[in-house]
Length: 399
Image (cartoon, rainbow, N blue to C red):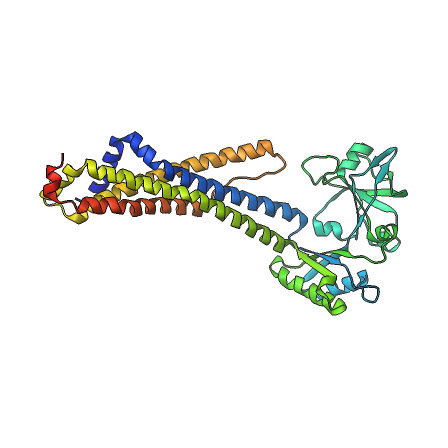
């Protein structure tokens, strides 16, 4: 009997008892489906993390300087010089000063609005766009002018879309609005991305009563060389402070990689737990194949009496087990894609601000199908061996 004929016979035997076959495949179906959905969820989370950090700039470094007392410090001029001297790695720099306090517009006091001191290059570094008026300029820094650029939320909610030329107060100091940012967030809301005010960093430092600038944002020339760029900055700061604890240099790209590694670890653990059901399914296949061998003992005896070899008998039952398992794998894959699409829809409705797409990978599908088929072969071997070893005389006498 050829392999094709053996396969056709296996299909015939499977279809002869559909419900029993389905229940046998159920463990395989659940296991494959679970693995595909979990891996798809992991891919979606990775994509969401990368998109989220892309807005912050994966080509940037964040430098925080704690210092070691008044005798050792780094000024903003030193940091600008560092970028100029290492232009093959570093591109732009902007001091950043986070101001604490509130914004007052007319009689309204806003406590959720973020207030940040930046340089004239910050907007180009972050990819922000000014749609009304102008951005901050170099002279605003040197002269410590009290001017600012506001987010679209403040522009629309408090100035009716005409904020340029108007004024607001930051901790009692009057600032003139010279520009309005383009909308960055999906919605204009209090405390959101567009509820912000940007002022010259020199003005922010003076009003915050900080002696020196302690935070910097630096962009790199090439994201492939971000590790080298980070090392250059760390080396310069270590030469000044001789202490690793005096500063921190954080790479957004490295942070994304670390978070992706953590997500992958969790996904692998969950997928491994889900794969246990594949083993359970394999045991179910082995159990039903042993029952099948018992039910077809007389058939096996007739075939062996007619000259069928042990290898042919074994091949028949192994192929039947593998076919059952493979069919369960295909159904599990189809169910996995269906549940992935459903999960994507549910996430979009429940968490509209968290666009996670559950997208199964081709590799996960191929591996899941291969494993399901392999389980059928492995767990079908013992019943097949039992069938092949039957004594034809005893088998013919079996009733």
